[in-house]
Amino acid sequence: MTTPALKNNFLPPGLVSNLQEVLANRKPAAAAAGEAADSAPSKPDKSDDDTSGNEPAGEDDNGSKPIILVTNSDGIESPGISFLVDALVRESLYNVHVIVPQSDKSTSGHSVSLKETVEVASVEVNGAVAYEISGTPVDCVSLALSGALFSWSKPLLVISGINKGSSCGHHMFYSSVVAGAREALINGVPSISISLNWKTDGSAENDFKDAVTVCLPIISAAIRDIQTGVFPKGFSLDVQIPTSPLANKGIKATKRSLWRSTLCWQAISSTRNQSASRFTGSQPGLGMQFAMLSRDASAAGAARRLTTQKKNIEVVESVGVAGKSDFKRTVKYFRAEMLNKEHAEEDENLDFRALENGFVSVTPFSASVDLDSAIETAALDWISSVVLHQD
Image (cartoon, rainbow, N blue to C red; front, side, top):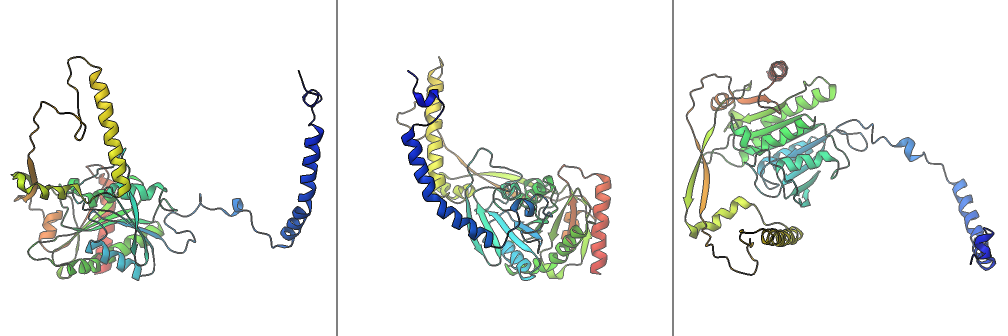
């Protein structure tokens, strides 16, 4: 049966009475709030004042300083990034942001942590906003430019380094410090990768401080020309600092060589297998460990369900799952090392030759293997102008 309230399209009298009483009690408070709002100074509409979509690239929220993003391949404790960030902060010209891997990822190349949870933790760096993540240098740059972590998504310049060891020739494909700069280039942001030609038997930590002194003029020149719009586009700079930075013979515009090392694999004893754990990096945080356990448990269950549905296929059991397998698994351990090779390339303008001869090698590179000839010419001309300015 239809009620009179619905039939005549009005509320029951008791409910109406209650609502009227509530509204009457609210009127004095609403009037007082209205008077206070009228007496307060008017504020501009946020939508009229919001410039987030039109904010100049590379500037912080108040537009006072350009944003410089710094990353590396071997973590926040690396002396290379410590001296570099300290120098940039002391200049008081830039808004410095830092994002680095939690552990050494020097030879991870252009790898990305797809479909994996990446842990991000803030770290204290004087004068800079800094984070370390459980990913690769490419993850660092990609996350920073995504807008998900910082309030901006496009810094003025990305600097990757200073790396411990050169990345000349084919080493650029292994080098994650070069990959960090390349990832910025792919996203349309100017970038520089910097490496020190570190020698185990002859280099000292203070050489990184000297390397900063050498490369700062290149960084400053790049920032100046990016701001004025005259910095050529379509390439990144790979800067190689000689072993004795302050004894360098000058800056030289160079080309990428075919120089490379040979990967040598050696079997190691099972009693030394703990040393192999170095390649897995530092232990993840507690939250990451729970996530990994959950993932492994789900994968183990899915594997068992899938394989038991198929005939003539053995049941797959993951490590740690109850039950024994008839298959006896053998475990071996290997370690890879890079051995230098002699190279016949004699061109003095190649990166490794210039570095060996004591020059600061500055090589333009693109996101692809080959650098477009027009872009290469523009890049080499710009480097030459920096050299002339230094002289």
